[in-house]
Length: 93
View 1 (spheres, helix red, strand yellow):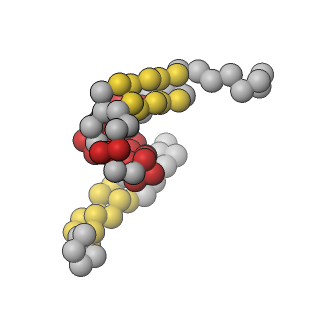
View 2: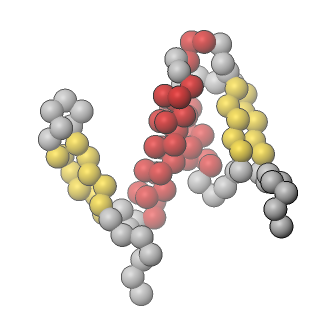
């Protein structure tokens, strides 16, 4: 039985765009890290500079990969409070 998700992760130089590595993304760990660190990076960019006094991170719909996102955010910016909601009731059955 083949994995449901197949692909490669391309690592490029930030200087000249040269291809540095191809990584098989079938490995669950690599895929999880890529997904959650991309979320952390996007959150860091959307939130703006960390020096604006915002020191709270909120996580909605906590799931299996939430720890990786939080670890990525901790690397990208300083914060001292974490709020999390595990389940959100949107009025759906």
